Image (cartoon, rainbow, N blue to C red; front, side):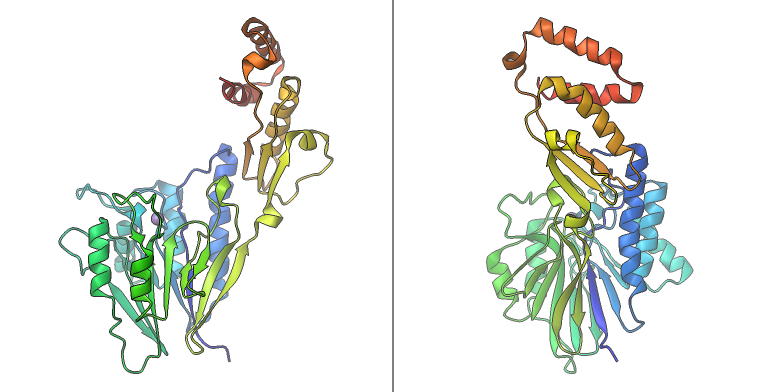
Length: 356
Ligand SMILES: [Mn+2]
């Protein structure tokens, strides 16, 4: 029989509008993220525990469909940590995560929501779980960096029950990021990590969207559950901790090599490739103005493909002066605009604006 697992899931950011998408593909993107999350929970046994490491929602308050998706996701989890996106300075507002928690209370759902800390309640958010041989301490996002460091100081030694062997600290923060905006994010410095790893076997954290491991795998930045932008086209994982062997492993749930294509616009215009199964396309290169019309049409065509989530054009026109005089450019622009279908006009203008 397989040993029970603790499953750690990174950021979901339900409610985020994917850039370079259409109305239809933005909805498909939300469903795609939900499917990734759903597949994880269907594979688990009753003795497994699922922990979401923060930022289930992209905004403090999200709209109808995103709320529903986020609610369903939280229902599959045993613990949901609050992230920086679940916090607002305005105490008169109720967050989507709080609404989820209220619904769970009313319906008797098992999920525990671990809220971001509020000023003066520095202990309120720390939650722990003893499961078989493992002791897990969970710290949600803390509104100030000073507050975060104060909380870490309090939990620096896990108060491990005597019958447990392993200890894990779960967080929602950056790791050693000098560009971290301390007003809205937490940062775990290298020094702090070293100190904590004297007492914990592992630290695992959400928040960063690209996954990485440090300290010989003892510090795990899970990465998000799905890419949210074109600079996040890296493999996405679920992290599993075997509570009996005390070992972490990961399962890749999204592989960019199967779903993301980056290619030169010239190659794109001449390829017979169908892009079936591709979700993200990024187009590069220096654009010959004569190809602008063909490229615009190609992008519109790609964006309409079933399963396509976003198409980003990074192909640039050379500077306007280098190509044509302003007068000639204006003529040429209006000629093309006359030829385009209505839904192509906006994209064409967008491409043109990049040369300004
Ligand atoms: Mn975050």
